[in-house]
Image (spheres, rainbow, N blue to C red):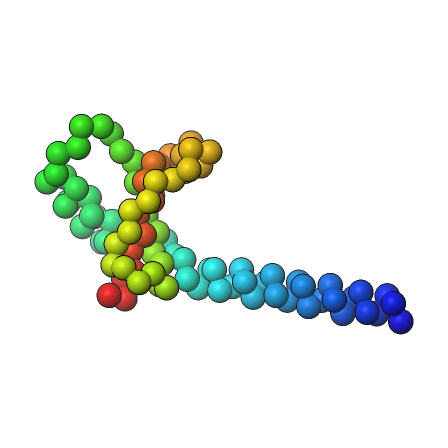
Length: 91
């Protein structure tokens, strides 16, 4: 009886975790190349004194069109970027 109870609880926890992963995968996607190229063209018209690498991501649930955020330092080396650019392409 006890083992079946723990199996049931484990099964529920695994299902909840998988649903959260699926929702995250639905909300966040790699940004399309034409949007990245447009952003880079606009950025080329601006003058920035330092070299900044960007990481582009699409967020469907985001309420703003474009959001810029600093990437934490422990992730800058693996991502090779310092600024996270999230775009909601549905707007």
